[in-house]
Amino acid sequence: MALWRETVPEHTLQGEGVRLRAPQIEDYEAWAKLRSASRSSTEPWEPAWAPDELSKGAYRRRVSRYDADRQAGAGYPFFVFREEDDVFLGACNLNNVRRGVLQSADIGYWIGTPYVRRGHARAAVRCVRDFAFDQLGLHRIEAACRPENEASRTLLLNVGFQFECRSRAFLKIAGEWHDHDRFALLSSDTRG
Image (cartoon, rainbow, N blue to C red):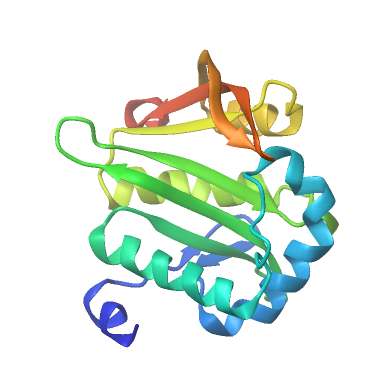
């Protein structure tokens, strides 16, 4: 794991009251505690959890996969921390980075239940948006949320995403296929 850290630049992002950085093995305890405490509020919007989802072994595999994605330039995972006291708040990930003629990526995020509705998700999404456009040179960021997820929908619109379509049975959430509203933001939307 040390090898990729030497060859792939670490990115620390600063936002409105938040700091984002790559997940580390040392984050396991804080991550597992917050994921466990937030399970009931995040489960309706996420893929089904594996039986060992919160185990240290599963977390190590997750960080290893994140490292491989960063090394390949295919994904940039970020853990979100409150700037004032370095408390772990959640995550905001740029996934499925596509180059060539597409120049796009998908964004996903979650904030732990004790910290929702305080602007942390909005600040994190803005940081990752700016990173995608200004540092990676991407053209487009895409996001998807279930139609009934009003909080996520509102956040995306407030950050500048535009609704594009509803995709039928788009993602498997909590073990079932669900329709998702799809949003996109272009680099040109953030200029001026």
